[in-house]
Amino acid sequence: MGPDVSMAVCCAFPVLVSLLLIRFAYVMYHSGHMPSKLSASAAGMRSLIVLGSGGHTAEMMNVVTTLQKDRFTPRYYVAALTDNMSLQKAQVYEQSLVRVEVDKEEGVENAQFVQIYRSREVGQSYITSIATTLLATSHAIWIIIRIRPQVVLGLGWSSIFYIESIARVKKLSLSGLLLYKLRIADQFFVQWPQLQQKYPRACYAGRLM
Image (cartoon, rainbow, N blue to C red):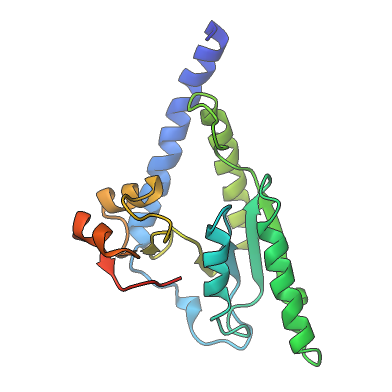
């Protein structure tokens, strides 16, 4: 690793840490406080739905199908630029709503699809992921400011009820482990009893997705 790369890493690292600390403080401050705008409204609530590669999109779409569509609208689906399948699945689902309710102004008109930079690709080194994480963080902040969602649905952050992926049988994911160790989540659910035994503060309620 050359001197220029080392200098770039040294400059980027404090910025990344600062952003993470700001994000952590923001989440801790707002944890448990429900926004006043979440009261019943005929206009619905702007909903940001975060999709992920692998089985995460299937799990999230299972949650989306249970929502009251007139309540959670408009819906913004977000997936990584390199994820070629997730947004397609969301589009197919939204198009099915149009076919079912052809006489109503619902479906694709109430859904938008957004791509976002990924912080780290599979197999990418941790050194090079510093720059891509900074780029992805900036892009995520811009999307949040532009959309200003009232509800965020994801396998992770918010007034947090975290549900660990069913694919995690023996140990938590890195995101889940951070939330568990830092006690950020208001409720932490696992989908396997052996995980609850290993992480006693977690809640086991059977298969949720």
